[in-house]
Amino acid sequence: MKYTGNIESIVKNFCLRKKSAVKTSAELDERIVDDALLAQRKSKTTQSAAMRPNIWRIIMRARMTKYVTAAVIALVIIIGIIEIGKPVGRANVVFAAAMDSVKQARTFSCTEAFDVTYEDGGKRGEYLLKQKLMFKEPDRERREQLTSAPPWSKDVGKVTIWHYGKRQRLEFRPFDKTAEFHDTSSDYVIDEKTGELKLTQLNTRLRDHLLELSAGAVEDLGRTELNGQSVRMLQSRKGKRITTVWVNPETSYPVQIEHKWTDRSRSPMTFKSIQIDTELDDDLFSLEPPDGYTLSVHEWGGPDYKKKMMTKIKYLGLWCVVYANDNDDQFPDDLGDIVKLGVITEDVLNKVLAAPDDPDGPPVIRNRKPNTAGKDWSTVVILYEIYDQWPEDGVVACFADGHCELIANQKRFEELIK
Image (cartoon, rainbow, N blue to C red; front, side):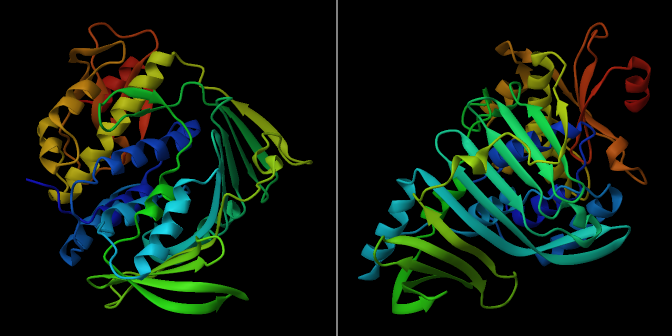
């Protein structure tokens, strides 16, 4: 059975409620979720009002996180809602040229904006999430958090910079003038096609999926003005969704893209100030914190093998959470159940289950179907690393709220899996 749940709502709320006990893995969480979402591209998604109570039950049972993975949510919406088609009519030439130009970009930046629902202290709220994204090929990326949910307003202005060539990441927050420097030499993701581990790298998928917005019939609405600039306005329609694209006629580059739904089942989503192949100063990607900031340095410190195990278990944990949401909060009896979602093949599952140094070997990850009734999901183990004798470095475990830990204390671990 193919998975047909509303992946947008599920993962949006998953991202909003998960809280990793390993703070330094926040960026890695995004990469794992992102890769897992791309594995879902073959499945079609539908808006299900009946599913929402189930989603809220999950949120109510777990801890709220201060991290909102906006770029991931954007990808969910693009992957889950936009069905790719072929443009027709005279306007397809202009539209295709504009979108094809995105593929050739050396640099890319835009500001994305859409409504996000959050949960805090038993109360629901909604705010307009805005984030500026940019990258410079082949290995530098920057994100600026322009807004945040009111309870976490201190994160407004937070900047995260990746340098994948140097395997380093910098985060700094204007609120308290603190900066964190991270060594990412052991940050991995799962290749969704093969199930193999690979180092994190520059993620250009947002740009690439903007290209795929040439879906359905494209209507040329002629020239108009946008922020004082003369542009060509194009439009595509797919069911209740209307996608409008404003294109610079001189460069054929899109400068703004907006999604709206005629029945208002979803709030509008906009990509503004799109800049393609323009000059981006290297200082924007500097790994030096601003003057006056207090810098702390964070390193993994554990064995590379354990980081790989954490990546594998966290990847599977995501789909276990999605499965539970679609099955009245019941986690899989067997990990083969997530294959039925249509988002992971049996071959990929077997590869992920195997040891990092023996990709064709037997499973080294055990599934545990827990009883979550009345429990804090952040304390309920759903997956863990198999061992014969307690490892000196501890055991990796994934919890029902999606976070992953390296547990060093054997007594604590045994209590958790009773």
